[in-house]
Length: 97
Image (cartoon, rainbow, N blue to C red; front, side, top):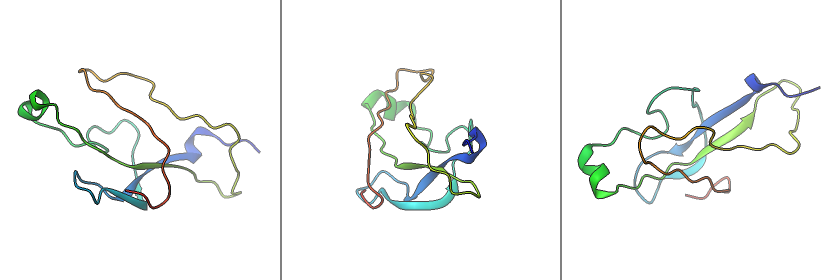
C-alpha cells in the first residue's frame, strides 16, 4: 500500500528555544502545514539587522495504521522566504540538540 501525503507529518522536538538545550527527542506536537511562526518565532527588525540565528529541530514521521515504511523519501524546502532568510536542513539523531 502506498503512503499518502496526509500520512506524512512534521513534529517539533521536545525543546524549542535559542539556547544550547534546543532539540532532543520528538514531541507529540504536530507542526501544522502553512501555519505562520509555528516552527520559527517572529524576530524583531533589530534582530534581523544584527543577523540573528535561530536553530530548530523537527521530525518527519509517517503516521499510518499499517506502519508502512517509506523508500527514497526526500524532504526539502520548496519555496523561498519573502525576505533574505536562509534555511539549512541537516540530518540529526533522535536525541541530539
